Length: 417
Image (cartoon, rainbow, N blue to C red; front, top):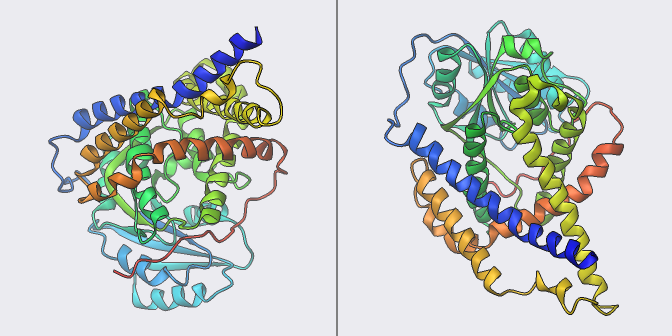
């Protein structure tokens, strides 16, 4: 009996990520040919250009503030202003923002005397703004000039659209870890976004770039301040309130990512804990028929959590085999020994990156140079997700529900070009 159960668990541990890879690829390709292929890369002409506020929460952004604000001023959208929120920075971010406000008439600066967190900063800026639409970015992000037009094209075309998520791209690529994340955002995250849009719902819009309708945010009482990842939480509450969230791949946003193992680990652990907090908080809502459109996304994440703990169980069994005889003649070790399964896995990784390269070459050239270090990265992605999930889930359960405040992230090595 135990042998049969263990065999099933081993089979599930191996096949689940492979099946999901092909699901993402098939749906990603469908999305591409249905909504992207053959469409012009020039921004559309909108029927109207309602005023928007670009909200930029900042905490210790002295290294990036000049560049980020300067790039924002190049937006081709004809009717916008920028609101920068200095959230109790301990460096000279506040002075830099004040200096920039004197230079740019479109810029307003809000200074917070104590560390309130990103969600509270966004809430305050949104409530103070007279505009009905918000484009929210991180303090290190560089937007392509036409981003606002691309994102607003969804919001002005349908009153059901509550938010639009953009297409984050990695800026810093001087290290192997930086290069790997270039492929990750294309071959994994980009495909997942497209696949989930086929489901009809997304797990999260990107916190680094999102465009919102104020009336939609007002209905759900804006961003929650007690969630460690406010972007995942606001995505779920908008969709549970029956607002549509769109994905706009033309809205390119260039971001800095961790280029150290420690920085990457902390970032992914935070993301994983934020996802766990969301599925725990809205578990009861999943029994409501009105929330049925979120069932697939919820189930997808829940199965990934189960898979993570099964992987932990298998690894523990494998470790015990070094100290105690394996009663099943090497079954514990079989999943870790490369064979036909290793060839199949490597081939799948290569196919997945090739598919994503085909799709993303429309938005970024020369991605092919990253193909060799990326062949096995999807496997590393799954293992990283499993490890962070195993640790993050109990952290989410036992976390005290206080306000989530700023902790300066590792943003890697800033590019010099």
